[in-house]
Image 1 (cartoon, rainbow, N blue to C red):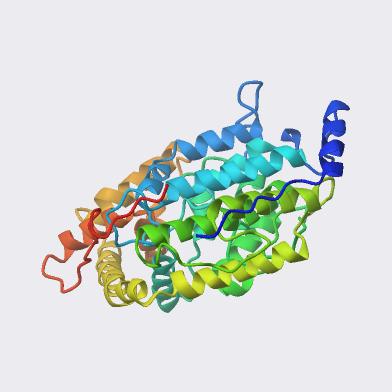
Image 2: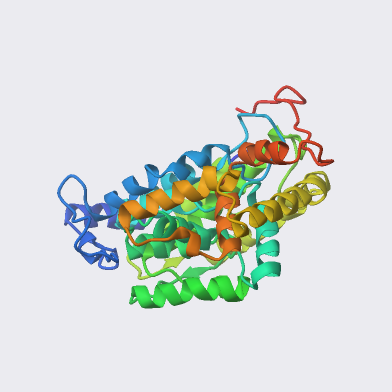
Length: 410
């Protein structure tokens, strides 16, 4: 691999930051705790030991679905290898990188942490392939789309109704890390009415609406760019571990470097250098061009790998279809002894009634209930359930053993 190259902040900016800190400078564009907006403003009153956005983080990490990050794969779903990244690590990396940047920029670190740790909580099993398959079926049946960022909002705001702040929900909705930009400029004056309209438009218009989403805080802008920073180099490490690419494969980005450590460092330095004291998050032209180039390289040599996508398309896709329609039939026929009732509907119904005695989960459109259930699954849960439901199915996954071609990258 290439020798790592680490950029540093300019001397002038370092001196300015030190001076600002000495003089007690406060970033006028940060989201203060006093600006926290909730649907139920008289609940979750902040105090000294549990400030506004700390409460959001704690609500998120105590949700049952937070546990399931641990077995939701990022890219490489067919490897029994604990050294390959799961979403549990990814959200922590996003939080760590974003907090490092936010700390120097003088932003609200509690809000950054809440957005980062919650941003993928609605992700389907089997990564973006599972997301795509679920969306295709839902659209066929209802004309509505499934997107993991929108479903993350649904998990927090509808299924579990934890009274999460607008700022956190908005950051989660707008986090989508597939659309790189050179400038991330917040739309500051959002309310729940605006937010709810955006959520609904994403269900109706799909990716065309997703592409128009703009966060309402600088903190959310930082998380959005850090979602990309966290996976670009890490996916390259995982690709080597999984033997998808050769250990000595050379990527070509210059400004950012080519490996995980340099990408994180150099993107962090570039963002701080160009964003400090501003009302938006900016990248230099060189960093922006390299970011696009790095993503393109990842797609060409990793994400579009034929051996990976063959299993997704020929095995996982039909498994989704088989499972979806049996579960849908069980909901429509009100089979209360079925798996979806025992393992999902009853659980969500009881949770909802704790916060809203009038809530009736079964009044939801049946396809949405099935989507809620499948999206909540981990990869292993999905595979185990499919085997239980279809013991004679022709579809099964062939996992690569931990020891099959294993290498450990230090």
